[in-house]
Length: 203
Image: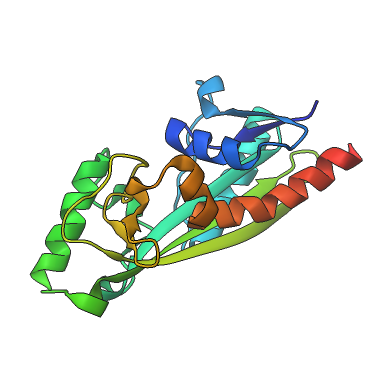
């Protein structure tokens, strides 16, 4: 059975992605299995560049086909910030709660209300094969708005602040099953799933 590495140390992200890939005739692990593998510097200018860079680097360093994603939250009132810096918005080594507090603080400073609190979650997933060097990518997006306070205990990152009007819930108020029906990451991963299934069928 072919093995793929999900290029993250984030157990929450691994769990989400592994659930989405259920049914693919392959084994999936993540970077916690490779403690000596050095982290990749995410210095790309776009989500696509970062996802591709991580997928290529981790496929080379682990010797396994690698699935990497880069995700950004783009808030209308902040001209698309935090964007590429979403995971490190409050600074190096920050916690999710630090990022959320900074986001609310910045929106408060601008007096952002109503439509100005609109936001888009974007995700790019890249699949790299160390044997061929080939990289394939897929993208997903989810539109919503940023609340003035957190709601929900599920998910991670900005999920407690990201409200989906048509569902009348934040991402953190959704079960993992519900989240995997609508999220930006789910949309991107389900597209890449078809490529994984084709690879496994041809191996």
